[in-house]
Amino acid sequence: MSKNIEVLYHSSIKISEGKVIYFDPFKIDKSYNDADIIFITHDHYDHYSESDIDKVIRQDTVIVVPEGMQTKLLKKGIKEEHIVTVEPGKTYMVEGTKFEAIPAYNMNKPFHPKENGWVGYIVEINNFRYYIAGDTDITEENKKVKCDVAFVPVGGTYTMDFKEAANLINEIKPKIAVPIHYGSIVGTMQDAINFERLLHSEIKCEILMKD
Image 1 (cartoon, rainbow, N blue to C red):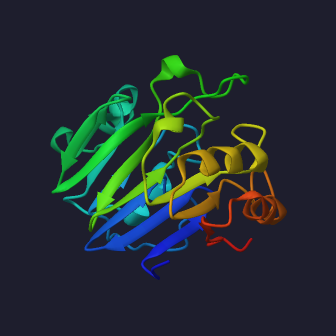
Image 2: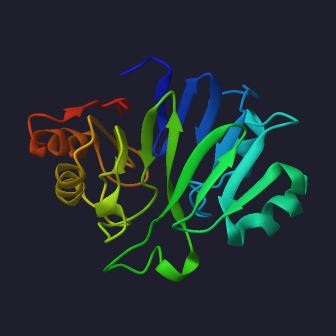
């Protein structure tokens, strides 16, 4: 995996391939203020953190959010022209970057209802498709995902556990799978290790978050 792809903490991801793109910035260690685009999957505090957005945002940063979150950003003082709202199942182009919003929701838990319209993303960068699943279980929609790299939650409780995450990855068959959503709020490093052990041999696992 490129050194330009990082899992910073929990579900916070940074990709610096041409553009600097953050997903759900959280517990950012200092002020970088280098983001071209920030993608937010939903409005739980460990995914939408205004103090962490402040550490990565620039004056011209575009913030991509589910439709229901626009009001929060406007109240925060983000200009409307810098906000892109998305609906599950649709494809968009922002700053020359093509992406899809994939529904992200729970099947048998109350934490992420489908009707909230929360999402994961497939972002195309340099002809690679990166799937950031968001907080989700296995769904009919994400079983159809086509991607090269998949970032999936493995911590359980609020999302898939490591067994379910491995089942999804073995079905959609990316080249590389990266476990996230463990190590702090829920789940442990052992969940990431167990996830790796369950993957089919042709799928490479990259554990980018070591604690």
